[in-house]
Length: 145
Image 1 (cartoon, rainbow, N blue to C red):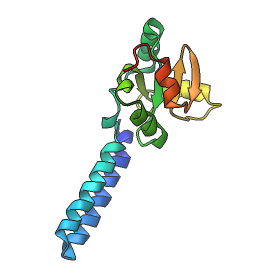
Image 2: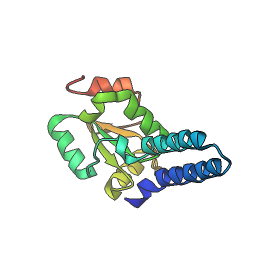
Image 3: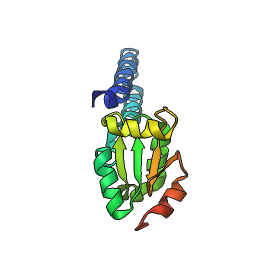
């Protein structure tokens, strides 16, 4: 769990240090804008942007019942973020597995990608797809929004 927050915490820390330097130099307005930008970037790269992750076993069980895709992702991954943003509200229909929180999810991704933890890996109908097009995933949803 802690690993998922390392990048956002570092971003906030760097933004705080830079803002402090700007305040010391007499630019409090610029410091506030700078800190706000770093905080927003940290939020985007945190686990807060993604739907609540579930375990790989639970996601696979649910997917077998209703046919929804399972997305294996990790915080800080720009391709995962791109997928999440491009799916918009449809992202809530997928099952999201954070491979940093779930060792079984990481093992599933490694098995699908020749031993690499390449994300996003999306499993549709039992077949893995590495970094697929968001439009294609949208077409796989049972209830496109």
